[in-house]
Image: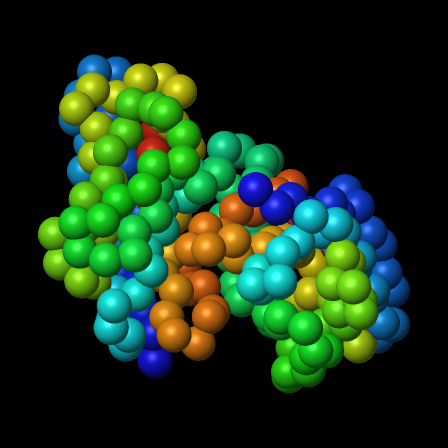
Length: 111
Length: 108
């Protein structure tokens, strides 16, 4: 079965500190990978997507970046966090069956 | 980008059917229609998807209009566990962008 491992579940970081969120995918090869962010009580905002190793598309200009060093590894980073980076971050993958499946998410609080 | 429009909220009684509408008038021929649902503090869960024909699975049915400009998710017998935010989204090329969704409340 397809599974996404996303960590950590909760993260509290000071403003100006760096960020690295990682997710790994099991059960499918060459997936399309996605990073979403969800503010409290809001819908999901697509941040980045990737259709292959080293291929990253950014949807929203922002303080964040993404990388895909391996087929089933997707990393979200920031050099200096802002208060507005707080939110619930979700990694997702889409296999050949068209279905999108999600990790359990990381709740990031920037203080 | 092709957009979807859904009602903000919908209420239903337990064990009654729920019909969730979605308008996507700018859909193109290769855009898949996806439905997901999200419970509080969880990631979204896949419900169903389709391209042109109606689709059924163990969770729900998807009815797609002949011109593909709208679709309806049907939950045949709502349970309390079906209370969630339901998202109708289009896969445009490789992008799946979520809107605000419909909050479904199920009354016991």
